[in-house]
Length: 264
Image (tube, rainbow, N blue to C red):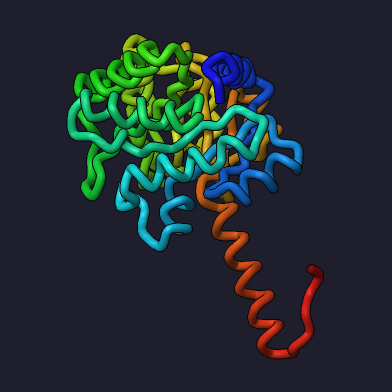
């Protein structure tokens, strides 16, 4: 992919984030799943770190080597004529310079966006705000050096593990504080997974300058309701991979039990 194409896809991807008219992402894990989702009418392609790791026989949490992630992105990019955003978890680096190097590699593979989270790998708690801002700034610097207006979807894990009943104004305030700091550091959007309380989602969308990404799930409002709350992006995470594997297992069980092949 030439740089002008990559740049135009990055610009188009940013334009798909509209409050009240959310971008719907059906997360994928390899070239085949990306092609299927593209043919289904996707506006953009997004990887799930959990699903990519699962496809390689390992667990989430940067257990998949960066080289394999980069190779996967490089395999996906040529088969879809769409913007491609990659979940790089915490950036595969303990320092801003290491995060910048990871981002440069992902850009080189053809991505135009990333998810960059503030949770701690293998531990509870969040990366301190100042440290996370330095990581975001490093990612932005790597993108500017490459000449690509990278969409940095800053994932904020304040609500991780918090039930809807315990989702409070105080947690929202902490999220908003991080959101504005991340925006100043160079973030393009805010991803608030596990936030499901409609009133808090609406306030977040109104009070942050960043377009908000919500993770769809059984306790999350429907996409139409999220649109009315001001959400700009809705993603599915690893659910598509789980669903596909469950269907594959069911089809295999039927084959072994009956010897009758399904559609194919």
